[in-house]
Length: 333
Image (tube, rainbow, N blue to C red; front, side, top):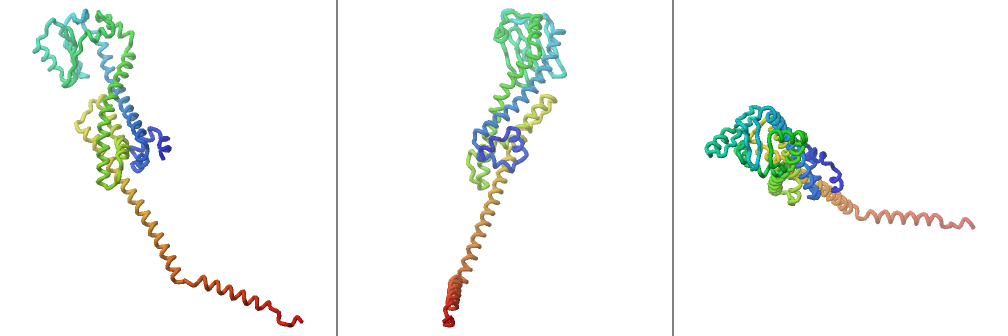
């Protein structure tokens, strides 16, 4: 059975996991390493799609920002770790709900900086003299220009040189680099997140099996749990795609995500219990038939104990009669 399971392709396993709960029994006895390989592959597919869609979304913003920088952004220069704009900017893009603020004065009051941050409701970036602040929702991150620019070998930079370097790389090159960075970070995050869900589902499957009075080993619960999570992982992928492309959001998705997996686990365990009960009934019927046949045989023996003797005596009598018939009667003399 294990050799047959190994021959099942990845996408065939996905189909069985989602649509054929009655076939989950084939996964019970396979090695745990097969289930682990399946887990990493399906999470990789999830990360690939999310990273691809996110790259597409970000590159649309980058392309639009690049055109803005070439045509509208004031001149700027970067020298010895400090950035200076020819004039300060407060720009807003309604399509992406994105703010860009520049204030490269020698000193920016804390109250003024807080005002800038408060004006960014969804997403935005603030360029200061020595650092940049990137804000998304309620989280923000700060980066020193020196750490970022010198990493790429630029000691001095201005608008013209930056546009020239971007043209050398090309937006496609930037997109590929962004995709590689995103798929790595998204994959690590999804592996950790999905693995925690897997552990929870494994414990749930083990406890549920005990409640249903099924003797299930932990490795069996381990195997069932990852396949039961398949549909939830696929729906998570679709949800992320919808979020990045249409801004669709629901706070109850996490609840639905886990609920579907729980339903799959319970359904599979109940099917296993049903199969066991059916097998027990069939075995009981076979045993009952065997007992009935044995009883009938014993009854026949009790009713006809002398039957073999009678057959034997009858045969001996026939032989004696034949012998008497063959003896001479004296007429031959």
